[in-house]
Length: 494
Ligand code: NAD
Image 1 (tube, protein in one colour):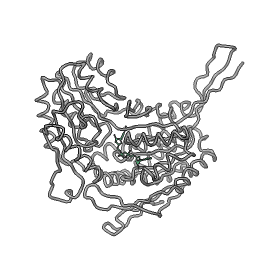
Image 2: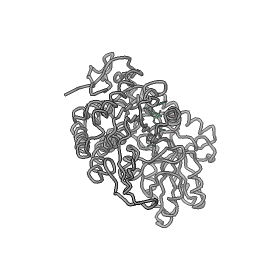
Image 3: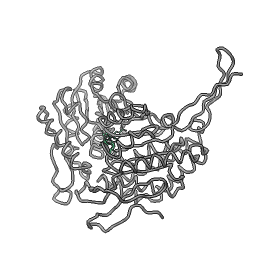
Image 4: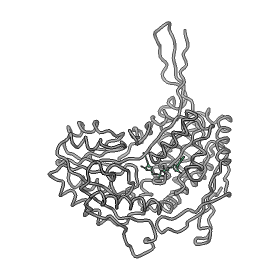
């Protein structure tokens, strides 16, 4: 088996993993490297190569070469079979993937084993299934039709790949979010150059191994490691040979990528930040709403783009709700760290800002003391605050940590207004037993996703994405295939 993650003795100067780029079907270690930090205890866990402009250029040329050699014209059946082999390959090395994801992110093992890695397998299976179910969406024709006008014509639409696609992913759900784009991009016949987050490069590297073993033609999938701004990420997104960019990350990064994409009018699909509201009505199942809010605010220590940071509660149950969520937050244990010292410091700066802005701290607000190795890691306490006005920065800006602000409301209209009073619009959660209210409120909320009496319940065929500063476009099911392919209409006068 090709092995790009060279295991070196733990505790040695080099740490335990040495990663490599994957370009034109070969693994490329070497060059300048940077340390991979274990966020659970702050130790050096490995070394990651930093891609130069030349490596990125080589990867883009390799991708173009794969297209020229016919990758984009392969049949849907063949591509579906490859996607299934990739899914099987991840499944066969499941524990290895879980270990790598936990090591890079510090997230609880259960989360990686029940969400991250199974969803990565699911992403490849879902698009393999979709190719069988609707091959014309990604490959050949739509239903031919007759058009009126100056004469009779037969119109049909061919979908062809976009070409070379750059995929840039973040650190919070590293393999899940990378494969969420790689699977539909390959399903549609594109050649991919991917750059995972510099904080969490390990499962992407394992994925390259799996893809290599699955027999994807050389150059159809390439992986380059490195940082974002003025580095591998920017070299890739600004490359004139890139035909489209699919990016998940911060809104400010999306804006920077959009500026460089503008130069070549490169199409973008953006999944960006959020400041997600939850609306809790007095008629809700109280325990379910408390439980759901604790999950939606504190899963992966708040480091999921869909996490709730603003909770609005109908006044009759406000005090009781705040007390219940506060108590549950204080009792949480086994939660993971922030991804890095830098991110820990950013989250703590918001904890301080909240107090300066006049918040009442109901739970948390500081750094936990464990009395073991974790004390050198990047943990912060799950935090519940109240008492801030809608204009407070802590209520408007994405913290991306385990913090939620809870505020009361009196009417349904006010709840909707508060939810929409945000520069972001990714996801919302509504807790109510009143079905009519749920149907009335949900479409009024300016987000791409609204969950009613649940959170993060996902069907991979549904549209996923945000409005306002939370993104551009939708991914998921056929929405992704739409982005990753170009419709070409052929009109024949008859
Ligand atoms: P980030 O924007 O800092 O980095 C994301 C990726 O972009 C990394 O691979 C990074 O190296 C790269 N990058 C950074 N600057 C770049 C540049 N100038 N040009 C090209 N590439 C560049 O985001 P992050 O801190 O890794 O992730 C957290 C953010 O992602 C949060 O805002 C979160 O809400 C968001 N997110 C959104 C979704 C979604 O589906 N909407 C999902 C997960 C995370």
